[in-house]
Image 1 (cartoon, rainbow, N blue to C red):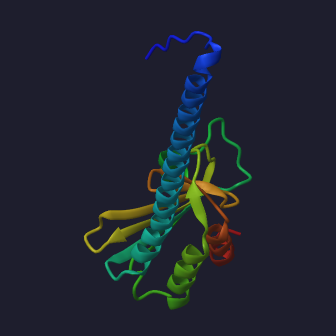
Image 2 (tube, helix red, strand yellow; image 1 turned 180 degrees about the horizontal axis):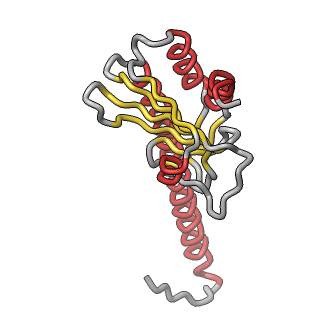
Length: 182
């Protein structure tokens, strides 16, 4: 829209005043609609992040998940490229399979679920150098959930969604599994 405006004469001051008031009101309305849209976007993102972790907790707790694989690639080992989820599955030094998660060590499953519940995670960039993985399978052997984390547990993926986390799950895994490879 092209506006042509000339300097008002003394008689037309009220027209300029009216125009500026209308313009100001339109700007305020536009800016407030932008803020409302931004707030809605943040709410949707926040609830989807919560759903992401809650979905992992629900799947880990459900009776349909029967098998768990824990993958580990030593933090101390350097690589020429960052370890991605695919590379972690190929290169892992240790793969612990719990074939019947429902009837295995109860403290392992309860500890795992607690660590997941306490894990605060939000969406992030996907550049983590991964060292840990937890892959959950259902009764038919179909993968239902995959979690991957860097050595400290602060960055990783839930399935293919990049996240940042507080590291509680990795600390639990280190405590429970470290004795197996030392």
